[in-house]
Amino acid sequence: MLKGRHYIEPLDLSKEEMEGLFGRASEIISKPDEFRDLCRGKILATLFFEPSTRTRLSFEAAMLRLGGSCLGFAEPGSSSASKGESLADTIRTVACYADAIVMRNPKEGAALLASRYSEVPVINAGDGGHHHPTQTLTDLLTIRQLRGEIGHMCIGFCGDLKFGRTVHSLVDTLARYEGIKMVFISPRELSIPDYLSTGPIARNQVEVHFTDSLEKVIGDLDILYMTRVQRERFFNEEEYIRLKDSYILNKEKMLLAKKDMTILHPLPRVNEIDLEVDEDPRAAYFKQAKFGMYVRMALLSSIIA
Image (cartoon, rainbow, N blue to C red; front, top):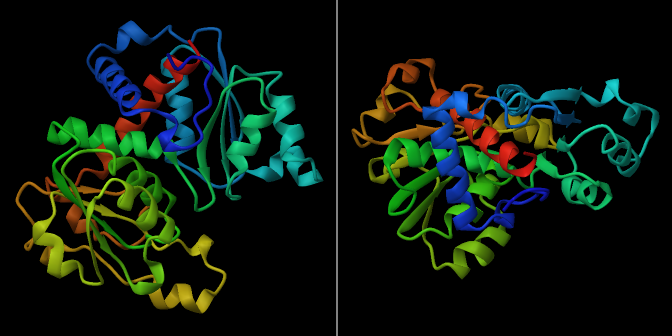
């Protein structure tokens, strides 16, 4: 069903197609040996024009666990982009060598542009502050595995909601599910972009609440999605310094939360979650990172195999 398709934005997949991927990921988790040769003889190119740990390594681990191979670069200085080569020419060239391309680029819309020049599937691993669709798959699989379903819950997004592409992609996708309530917790300067409020939130009539206080709303949340304030998205260093410590989750705040609340974070973490919270059974962000590998195995095996 997904064979040969690009994956650029979260809504490129229907709910049914996403559920199919989650089902396949669950099978991979329970029966990994049955999937170890699905991509044997296939090559995945990972083109990362921006730093990454989890996304790049989880894609490479996913491909290797499926029996395939990987090639690529982890920073643009090691590619011909440093010589001024256009993205279009890079993609045309890499498509000669690989069966699929995973790309992260700091420029919004770069993945869409790449898909127009590629003869093989392109998967968006993050384009600026725009989208990060495979992180959304990771988040949704984590919710599904840990809470049993994706709908009928109250989810709070806390931190940098303006520049956080993981938040943008997840809000866009969650808005399609029934019974979803969203609480946006941020300083006014880092509030979600207007296009989310006037687009998927309004279109799906999602119940939303805005606040600048985590303490006031944490007791209402089923899921708390923490994010870091992203230094690399700011043009003004003073503005970053002023806002970087806006929200820090610690044991004291956790006393106000539900006993079964789930804490998610796309990582990397700076200081927005105290290390002491890691020992709390509600902290699921490292499980989330592992689910990211499984859902990327499901995606790659569906697109390439």
